[in-house]
Length: 250
Image (cartoon, rainbow, N blue to C red; front, top):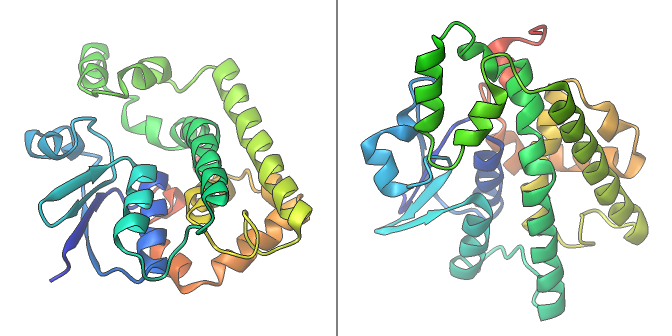
């Protein structure tokens, strides 16, 4: 049996980035799906693992690691085969700079159009009191659900999210063009690449692919990564929102 278990939602971009890294590093793991629709991530057993009530959570034997970027760095520290981090301390610092930027800008931004287009539909017929109770049950996402309400995010917040996605796409494209190499940090595939890829794939899945495909270096990066076995194993059938809701969902 695999020593590692990854608790995740198949469609979660943060879960996908950890799956990508696990497959790239050839680390055996068991994938345990947490039932988002029935809010299993808020159940007592799961909150004991992850008090934030979000995915992913990784267990390695008796050790529990939470937060997707923390998990990526943990895997690099413990599983040194198939390394995805530079040896040079300065370059490692630049790698962490990218990870923090991705955490702060595109990763939260992609949630807004994702929920607007698909996930908010789960709550549109919920009673107001029940929705408020559901929102308050989320340890770290309460305000996110309150801002979304049952009708989706405001036009202002949606526009800000789209702008953040566009600016992040430009920053990555600029980096790829500047060094003319295959990956975000240069010749080496680092954990920065799987940290960003799920956001890009989600943008395409949401119909925002022009932000990717109108930037030649970024388009080439996506197409290059999409050929890798780790990508194919990560984005299995059911891993995209359109697999669940259909491509024509408004």
